[in-house]
Image (cartoon, rainbow, N blue to C red; front, side):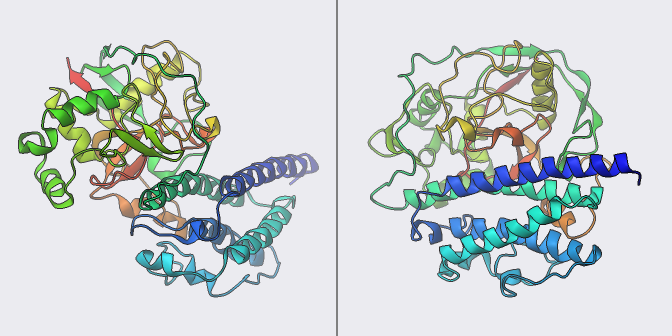
Length: 438
């Protein structure tokens, strides 16, 4: 490696160190006003305590980066606390044992203060490592994965905390009441036509993506039309008032069983008096906002009731790419109501975003359910090593969501991003839009 290559690599790692510091600081700021008690609550098995999230993302850097790479570079690795290797492992069987997910809320120790000390100690080692000019490109890719992994957990911190607080009769607020101007009428719903044909989906370019976004490949899409905005609270309320939760004809068999077993009669966080629980506490239900916190089963049932359907993920990405091409930003920066807006709640649409293709709120506000099962793309190959467990082993019994939400960091999102959850899940900021065949 000549001198110019060494200087270029050192410059790249300084940029990576800045990105690392920014994301780590954002996690710290996100939870700055929470008490230790707030940070250890676990309201259900699917959710994790805030304290566990903060420790787990740090575990990722300590175990998957420092433990592996420091010895390769001739440096000594000493664990911060050997027990953390098991305690904060999530599901990496290749790493070793892990603490049962359902029992994370019982971990009163280590304390929040100790978790913060853990974060600070690993940050010091990570920054020292990144500021070394002899780091390998594959190490940079692993650190970038860790940064994006932490951004995913920033969203999970908010969605899990919202569920924790919703179980408290006090309905406490995490953030101040939204200060946007009072919303007006809902954006008129209409459908935008797409001709279909051969399209390419999947990540393109050299920028970061998760392994489940590759490889880019061709798909055939029949002509379709897509709603210009997500389904709203007001529209979903019509479904509720029309007996949607009492009519088995609209529901998939497993969905109807879930409705009966769980006694669902409205989206999660809708309150009996017409209000809704938000991260700002109790708020009036705004009819013009996108409906939020619905499962795949609820989205699919509404679509059947409305004589429409949910989009496939190929249709969704094809529409998103068409929209982004108008803004010259394919797989690049996208605009929308993301975490940085501070609202932490879906907003009433205000017009087209990311180009002038007629669609609004494709990115941000709510994750949008698709009718596509979460499966590997043709030719999919997971990442090598332990991080190969990150996505591939979950490719069964789950459905794909697209577009990000009001709790997603803005620079974490792109048109090819594939999120996935079980069809009954609804504690995420999940909504949907309709499509119809042409």
